[in-house]
Structures are given as structure tokens and as C-alpha cells.
Image (cartoon, rainbow, N blue to C red; front, side):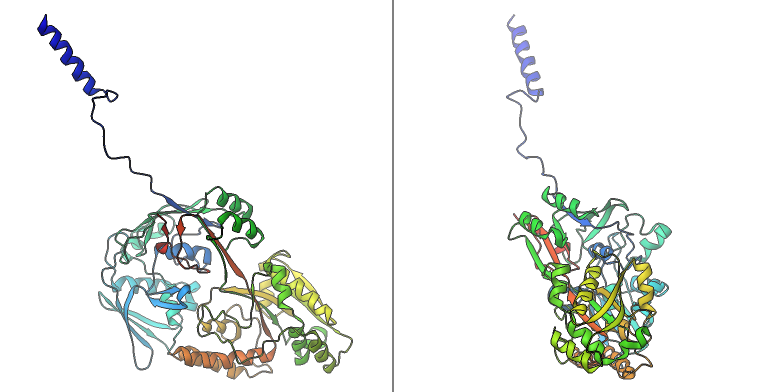
Length: 523
């Protein structure tokens, strides 16, 4: 009987040990690992591709900046370009040949080392695409000296080539070639950036994963998700519900609410790297070529109240502009030494009188896009009101881009309201003032009444000079000539509103190309 009793007790103990709920069973001392926190960001519209050479749309480039890198990078918080995948750059005496040594230890997301052949592949691919002609037009040849050295030869000395070095993102030849036509439509590992894509759907967005072998050190935030949310009201709800952690270029109409929801330490309004401006076509035949009269154009400029424009389109939160690009982001952008046409109604009326129109004058139509409630549309209506206050009558036509922009580019207009953004080198003024420009050439100076030869000479001299101080000198003279013509009037730099979640550190805010690798979750 004793043996049977002991055996029964033993069996009970064994069974107890095997049961998880038994008090004598061993317990694990390690808690379950917490789920990795995902950084959630907004895409205002679908990401068109994962191929960095698919478009030049800013919304796409913001995502690609996390995945791909160029020979140079752009840092808006530090006012300029810096070497990214390039470790050393030597410039020949004639300033036409760049010998670039690549950074050591850089790997693509697929594990392949960065080689000069990948740079040659990327640049030659871009040269075949007409969309990138503005970046590659000055490049004659790109060749690999060895695996770690690239030689880029230009047709002429051209300091703004660093913009090309920043804009063209280096891709892994093996990865891109193996995917063929699928490249850009599916996640790939063709970049060198701090993140690589793991999921991609045009309608919903893209997911990114930290690249632990990134040459700059593994990013602190490991998972990133871009969500397509087009409606601003939906965005506001998403931020309130913690479905978005970082929201840049937020709607100004919702700013007060978003600012309150974010809290005092988690919002900022900064000057954008953008420009809204007015162009006056001095060659317009309207009303017996009335806009050819210098005093009439000057009167128009003095009649425009930039504070009224700021209030109407940015709630007073923008920054009245005096030049084409903000000097904060473009160090070669002039800030003094030219006429700014400060609002002066008395001066405008006086000029009209001197021009022979003491009782006012009709100047034609102000055209803009894409709708009356858009930024540009509101500006056009404010200008119409400002001009009426001094006796200048103008109609307004606001329509879709497809209707308006062909009129602008063919100089088939009287007055136009236009916008541009994300210019990081003053050489981009070329598209507005040089006769060889394709698109955005609103005012035709060549063969006109102004010194167009000097204008184009200064564009070329500014591009050829290697020192920023020398370039600024040329561009200041250039901008003085342009402003003296009273044909292009910079109006306002639109503000960029940013909010972010509590517990997220974003470093120094920038208006356009933020870098998630610099973000971190606070402990």
C-alpha cells in the first residue's frame, strides 16, 4: 500500500510540473519584447513610384530622400550642400572636370558595395531621360577611374553642378537591372540611404525599414510608414487620433487647431523655400501696348500691397518677398542693392499721372491657376483690388493649370501670378530670364527694350564662378536689372507649418527635405 501511495503522489507532482498553471512550475523572467513603434507620416497624394528618376515632384522626393542618396546632399538647416556619398572632390584648373572619391564602407540595401560603376550607371540613365535635361545638360561624360573614383566632365565651368550631384540619387546597377520594368513598382534594395522599402501600394502608401548597415550609423527609428491622406480635414482628425506622428506643410486653415492639439513644444511655423510672384508682360499688345510704358508697370508694382496678399493667402503668417529665392536657404540670393517697390499708393498715382493717365487706365487681364480659392487665385484677386484702389483696372481669369500655363509660357498674357518652390541655387533664375530656358520663361527679354545681353551674360558668369561671394556679386547686378524693368515682382514666401507628436524629437525643423534618420523617440 505504501508503494502505491508514493507512486500516486509522484505522478501528481509530475503532472503538476507539466501544467503551466501549477504554482510550482518555473516562470520566465524575461518579459515579452514590446512592439516596435512605427513613425507615421502623411503623403498628400499617391507616391508615383519607388524609382527616384520617375518624377521630380517634391512629395515623391521627400520619400526618396529617406531611401536614396546623391554624391551631395542638401541640408536646409545649414544653408547649403554637403558631400554625402562623395568623400573628396577635386576640381580641375579649367573648372570643367570633377574627380570624385566615393565614401568608404557604403553599402546598398542589397549588401552590394557602392562602386564608381553604379554612379556611371545612374548618371547615364538620367542623361537618356529628357525630364532630367535641366540636371544633365552640362555633363559631357561620366567615367569610372577605379572602383572608388568617378570623373565627371562638363561642357563648361558650371558651379551649380552641385545641385545635380544632390538631385540625382545613386542606384545599384545590379538591383535595377535585375528588376527591369518592375523597378519602381515594387520594393527594392537599390539605395544606400538609412531606410529601405518593405511594402508599397500606390493607393495607400509605403512602409520603410531601418537599414542597420547604413554607413552613417543605424537609424534610431526603425519603422516608418507613409500613409496617403489627401483631405486636410481627415489629416486633422488623423493627427488628433495619433494616426500621424509628423505632419509638415500642414494646412494653414487648420493651423490653430493643429497647433493646439500638438502643444507648445511640438509645433513650428517657418519660412518656406518657395515664391509666389507677379509677372508683367511688357510686350503685351493689349490696350495699344499700354504695358510697354515703364511708368505704368512701375505704378502697378507700387500699388501692390504684399501685406494684403499675406493676410489673404497665408493668414498673415507668410513673409513678404523681395527676391526670387530666400537667402536663408540660398546663400547666393541677393538681399540688397536693388529696388523693392515698397507699397506706396501715392507714388503709383503719381507715376500714372506722369505716364499720361491721371484718371486711371485699363491694363488687361490678370491670369492665374488653379482655382479662385488657391494661393495663387487669392493673390490675383488681391492684386486686382490693389490696382483698382489707384485707378488701374484689370480683369481676372483663374483656371486650371492646363489652360493657364501655356498662355504664360508663350507670353500670351498681360499680368500673371505664378509660383515656384524648392530652389537651392540662384542659378535657377535662369529659367525665368534666359532665352534658352524651356518652360517658366514668362517674360521674354531677348530682342526686347532691355539689356537682355547683359542679363544673359550675368546668368552665365554666376554659373561659372566657383566662389559664393563672386556669384552673389553677379546675381545682385542681375537682380537689380530685372527689378528695374518692373516685369517680375516677388510677392510672398508661403510659410510651412509643422506639427509633431509628443515624445518625438525631430531636431532642427526644415521646410522641405526633412531626414527621418535625424528623428528619435524620447525616452
